[in-house]
Structures are given as C-alpha cells and as structure tokens.
Length: 128
Image (tube, rainbow, N blue to C red):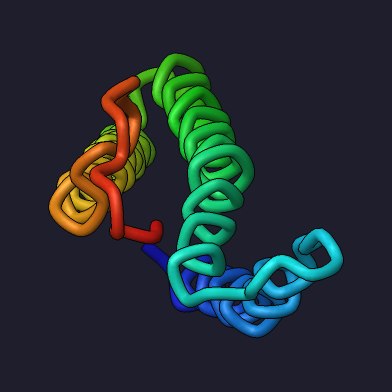
C-alpha cells in the first residue's frame, strides 16, 4: 500500500470523526422530552448502523472489485499481480473489521439495553 492511499484513508476517517458528533446531536427531540444519554447513544447507534456501516462496506467492496479487475488485467506481470493480491487481502481484512465492529457494538448494546432489538417490555421504573 502506498503512503498516498493511507493519507486519503486518514483524511476520510478524520473528517468522519469530526462531523459525527454534529450528525449525532442533530437528532430531533420532541419538545418537553428529556434528552438523556441513552437517547443520544441510541441516535448514535442508529446513525452508525444505517449510514456509516453501509458507506464503509460499499467503499470496501468497490475497492476489492477494482483490485480484482487490476489482478485480472495484470497479464503476466508478477509485480502487478502481487500488488493487486495485497489490495484484495487488505480489502477483505477491512470488511471483516467492519463486521467485527458492528458485532461488538451489537453485543455492547444488548448488554447496556437488554431489551434492544426485542419486543420484550421494559421493567417498570427503568427508563431507557
């Protein structure tokens, strides 16, 4: 991988980390409703699950497809084939990492909010 590519990835992740709080806190809260930490966490997870994860998955899949195309058209040049193979491997590693992060957040969410994603009633006296 080149330094230029890692510079672009660093720039994108920095931009996302800068703008993520503004997206999270831009959630509409009904007048009179308390803005709790759990509501903010829930909004963050909604944005993360519905916006950020699909965007990263799409970017990684496009990266893998481009690398596979480069691998296919490399001809007999072994150096180009090895470079393309490395891109495919790192793309797959990135895809696995995204799914691992998604799974870890789902486990943490189920630990913090035991009724998240289920139709179970919330016990009386517990505000989520």
